[in-house]
Image 1 (cartoon, rainbow, N blue to C red):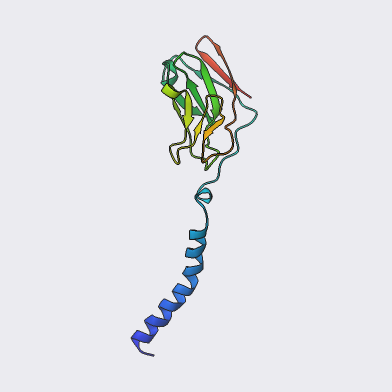
Image 2: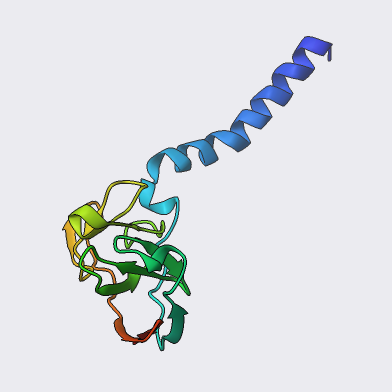
Length: 139
C-alpha cells in the first residue's frame, strides 16, 4: 500500500465515524443546546436592598436562581431566573416592566407569564416582603 492509498483509507474511515455525529447535530433543534432548568422550590432567603442594584428603582439582580427586580414604582418582583426555553438567565427591563431572555428574545410579564415566544412555559413567581432594608423572597 502506498502513501496515497493509506491516506485515502484513513480519511474514509474517519468520515464513516464522523458523518453520523454531524448529521445528528444538524437534526436537533436549538432547544437541545441547553435545557431549561427546574424553577427553584422551597425558597426562603433575605436580600439587603440598601445598596447595590436593588437600591434604586429599575434595578435587578439574580440570587439563588431567582431574578429579583425593583420596579420603577419601587415594588419588588421575583421570578425564576432560567428562561423556560433554554435555561438562559433572563433580565429585567424596567421601562417595559417585563423579563426578557437575551438568548432568543422570549419575553415574560412582571408576573412571569409568557408574552412572546419561543418560550411556551411561564416563569415561576415568588413572594416578596420588605421589612426596612431587608427583602424576604420566599415560595
